[in-house]
Amino acid sequence: MTLEETASVTSTTTPRRGAPLGWAAGLTLTAAAATLGYASAVERTLYQVRQESLPILPRGAAPLRVLHLADIHMVPGQRSKADWLHDLADLKPDLVVNTGDNLSHRKAVGPLLEALEPLLKVPGVFVPGSNDYYGPVLRNPLRYFAGPSISLKEKAPKELPWADMFSAFGAAGWVDLTNRSQSVGFRNMRIDFTGVDDPHINRDKYAGYPAGSSTSREAPHLRVAVAHAPYQRVLDYFTDGGAELILAGHTHGGQVRVPGYGALVSNCDLPTWRARGLTWWEHAGRRVPLNVSAGIGTSRFAPVRFACRPEAVLLTLLPRSTD
Image 1 (cartoon, rainbow, N blue to C red):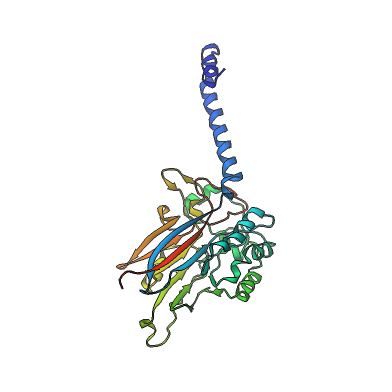
Image 2: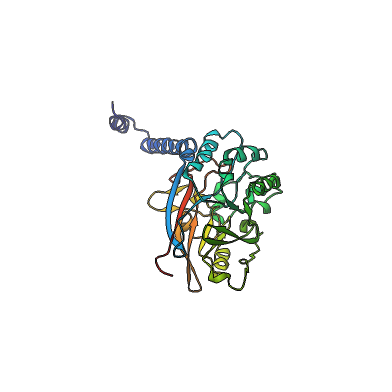
């Protein structure tokens, strides 16, 4: 007997009111349970690499492959995530940009460094997120619809061993851009970086770009800005400062997206349609490419993703056709 036949028999032979509603409720609960099971057990481990190309380098510069990592949220025992991160070195990036929230457990630094070991041999830069400093807290997921979640205002969070992570990244040669700037040479050009501490917990202090010599603007260069959370105030001062590329994470792409609609929340003041992907940020007459990564992990208290696969982003930067 098919489901349709069963429903027909029930509706004609059972005179109790509400029987069709009971069937509908049962089907709805079953669908919800199946969706939650898929989101928690399947999709959150369907790691992918999103690839983008941008013609923003000075004319004559060689292409540059930039691997953007965000929101790893490492927890001990996440073997599939660690193996996937380890294999990202096969993409042969020229530069790694890590936009924070690497940790989600106080014992996660060791597993994180083991997973990133091949990539730590590649030149890199990084900024922290709040979940590098403090462990995640359990909260009602509906609270995200009321605005950005700033856990520091709710309770005293547990501090994570962020200093150990910073030291290991620095020892590998990755440049710390926490409220600071630095220039790095790449082949026949220079990249001027600026970065901020996590705007989500109001630790951002914009340092501008390196001053350089009186003729530094004449040499081939690219200005890159890096932050964890893409709050609009941060994007605006990056843009006003002359950024030519902005990289951020934090949003998890919305984490749960509605097919055909997109993200419901961004966990900051960024419009939800910008919660994942490459778009153009406009302010005061300037347009700057903005890449927001959907991230690789989730809080260990909310291990679900739906219509929003975890991702790393490989940006291939190409020379401009005109200056």
